[in-house]
Length: 414
Image (cartoon, rainbow, N blue to C red; front, side, top):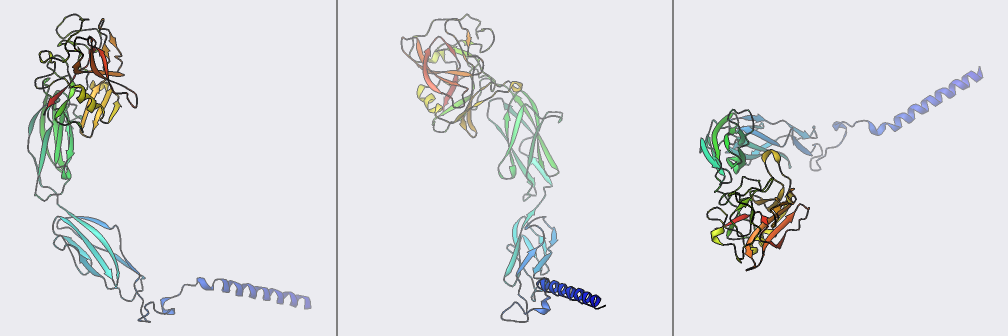
């Protein structure tokens, strides 16, 4: 019996010790009610200061004109004594705000809404938009020429303060597919201008969209081999470079294609692929011109254009350049792209024809050879440029036999 009492006592003692230890360990984790702690404002011992305020949701908001929204807020801590929120707008003419946090969009623009409690604030940037009710274009029909100046469509929206971003598309006449005749790129503020570039013969429907509103322009593209818009290359003042090689004498080739080969200071073109064909049906001439300059009478460039000088080519070769693979679907050759931004000139790598028999050499889209206007008087050699398909091309001025057939690129004085 005594042993039983002793065991019972020990069990009760152990249980009491465990309960005491448990209560002791958990004592600091018991939440303290605000009523059990002193105030957090040192000047007012019985009040609780604000530590922050939050506008629930994102800190940016977009509203259409006449639209409204009421902010939901949280003040920290939730038991802060003063929870009075003061609301202000940085531009009440665009967005007004009431004492209860309701905002109304009045006019297009932007305003910062600020909610303040004590010295704590949170803000929201509100952008006010207006949808277009009507869209018009400066042209409903437009004619472009391949290689000629780009076209420009300009959008006008009603009302005048509409904020829609314009979306541009270019479709075939049946509106089923993307057009291969014209490309369009949005430019300017909110893409209100559409820059049109003629790519190939055909017709395209250019579509400008402003929200649910649309307007179209029918663009007809034709090919005129005597016209090229030309581009300027950074660092080369006073001239424009043609964007295409010379094809038949007095004509430019289609964009991206190789054109024809020419022997130096001769006005007969030769095919750049396949069997040898002359522009006038003649046979290959393995003699050479003895002139020291490409004569005006033999100028193969279209009217107003000429062969570049050695100095102009030297400046040209200093510009940024990279190798570009061709696109067989669009009949574009491999070659090097010179320049930067919109001011670029693509030179197809056509190889050349040998001066002795006209055989096509390096015609596998790896090397390009282009004539300058300068030769050696009473000598069989003239200056040319050469490049290849290496990552860092060896673009150089060299001297080759005048009777070789090389590509020709033209320049025009501004």
